[in-house]
Length: 351
Image (cartoon, rainbow, N blue to C red; front, top):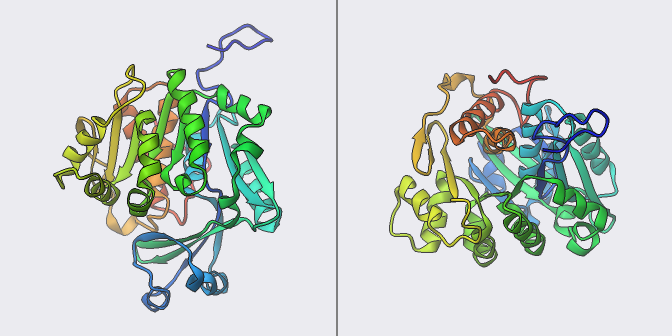
C-alpha cells in the first residue's frame, strides 16, 4: 500500500489515479424523438453507429429540439465517471485520456469532468472539433449516433508517450478501455495492455458494439490475450461468437469460450461478464439476477451498460470479490436507467 508522506499511514487501496481509462470523449446531446425522425436518418430504435455523411443534418436538427440535454459522454469516460461517483472519496481516483477540440464543446467537457472529480488529461488539437454523440430517445429505446471528430485524432506519440502522462498510466491498478477505441488508436491500447500484463495488474475491455467484432476483428484479437475482464451485452456477445466461429448461440457458453481464448498473463484467469438487459447477467461461471425494477420506472436506457461497468470497476479497485463487483454494477445501472442520460444523484446509496 502507498503510505501518505505526512502521517506515514497507509492510504486506501484506491488512492488517486488507481483507475485508468482511455477512450473517445464525446459530448452527449440527448433528445426525445419520434419514429419518423429515426426513419428519416435510417436509424434502428436500439443501436449504436458511427455518423456518416447522411447524418450531418441530424446533429443540427436534434439541437433544435425542445428539450436537449448535454452531458459528458463517451463509453469509457462514462464508466470512469460512475466509478468515481460510487467511490466518492478521494477525488480523482479515475484518470481519463482522450482527444478533444479547442472549442466550446471541449470546454464543456473539461468542466463536466471537473464536476465529476475525474482526473481528465485530454489531448487538445484544433484540426477537428470535439466529438459529439446524439442520443435519439424513443420510449425505452435509444439510438446512438456518434460523430467522433476530435476523438479520432488521439495520437500515442503526442500524448500517451509523454513522460508525465505515462507516469499516470503507471500509477493505476485497474485499467478499462472500451472496444470503441480500437477504431482510433489500437497501438495505444496495446502499449497500455502490455504494461498491465507485465505488472500483473487488471486490464478490462468491452466488446462495445457489434460492428467492433465485425470490422475491427484483427485489432480486437491482438488485444484479447491481455484482457483480464471482458464486458459485453447479449447482442455483442452473439456477434463476437459468430465472427469467431464459436459453434453456439448460448450466452453462458459464449462466455466460457471467451474465457478460454489464449491469455498472456496466466496468473489471472479471465473473467467474462455479459449483461442481458432485464435478464440475468452471465459471468463465468455463474449467473446473477439483476435488480428488479418496475418497467414504468425506466426513463432512458442510455448509459446503462457504461454504468454497469463503472459500478463493477468501483469495487474492482477496492479488490472486492466478483459478486460484489456485479452487485455494484447492477446497482449503478439501476440508478442510471431511471434518469435521462448517463446522470446520477449526488451520492450513491450502495452498501
